[in-house]
Image (cartoon, rainbow, N blue to C red; front, side, top):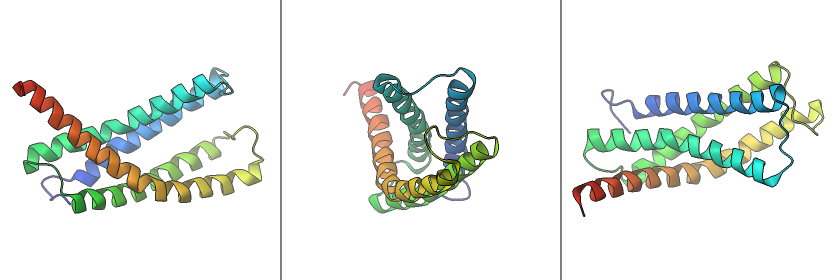
Length: 156
C-alpha cells in the first residue's frame, strides 16, 4: 500500500482533512455568520453536491500520484485496502471536526443538545460502512478519469 518513498495514505489523509475542515468552516460561516438556512431542497442539494465534489479531489491527486509512481492503477485488492484504511481515518477526521464544532457551540438545528452526540455517533458508524465502498468507487473513478484524459491527450 505504498512505500516510504511514496506515502499515499499520509498524503491522502492530509489532503482529505484539509478539504473536510474547509467545507466544515464554509458551512459554519454560511449558517452561523451569514444566517443561511438549508430549508430548500435546491440549496441543500447544491451544498451537499459541492461538498462531495470537493471531497473527490484528494482521490484524484492520489490516482495521479499512484500512476506516476507505480506505472499503473492500483489492483483491486490494493484499492480495497486503501478504501478501508482511508474510510477509518476519514471517520477520525469527521469526529474531530464534529467535536470541534460542538465545542465552539454549533448545534444542529432541531436536535436537542443531549441528542446531538448520539446522532453524530450513529452517523459516523453508519458512514463508515457506507464510506468504504464509496471510497472504493471514488478510487476507481479517479483512475478511470485520469486514464481517459490521457487517452484523449494521445488522440485515441
